[in-house]
Length: 228
Image 1 (cartoon, rainbow, N blue to C red):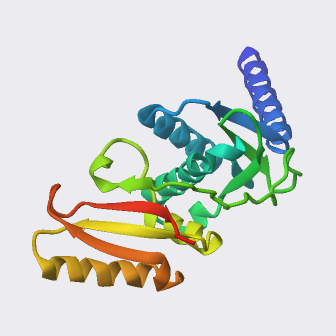
Image 2: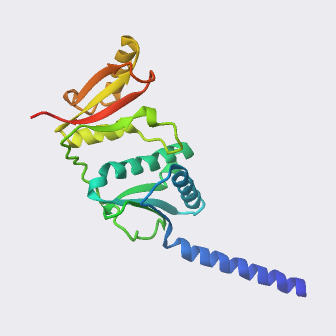
Image 3: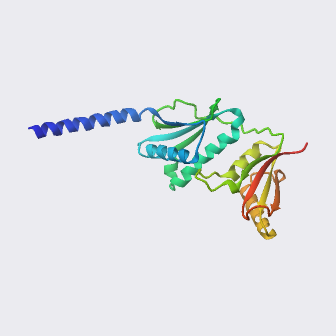
């Protein structure tokens, strides 16, 4: 009799747990908030924890909401692309990646990322259709990317995609691309490959240079205001 009672209690507890879980999964749950500083190892680990939580929650979508000051556009874009880079690294199958959405959040004083789990049937407690203004007013040359600084633990970023997006919006800017190649043939080959990836950008917004001052194979991209 005691065994039967214990089994009955166990069944009741399981049922209660399932009911509570179902109730919680119907809501929007803030899993984590990162910022204003972002260390690569910590950032990657917390993204992975969020990925796992979303993947293990049926009928849910993971939202990463990025907010920040109007003057830190490049930082916000980098964080957005880091999340996509970590998704590409962790998930091969497209249906799995579709469970995650990166939201360009509203402007705030501090840079931050909120990681959410939201039921597909629920309304998000934040706007999901906001878009950032990619206008980038520059009055001097800006070193946007140096490949020699890569190789750390930060998630990979599709830099060429970001550069193309910035140039399309900012017609007053051009990109000076410096390839570090000892041989002219290597330089020409990389220029052709880069132009193929940047086919959505007008060629008058691109300038290419060859240098041998750094390790061969690296490259830099400078964003430069066009002369009036």
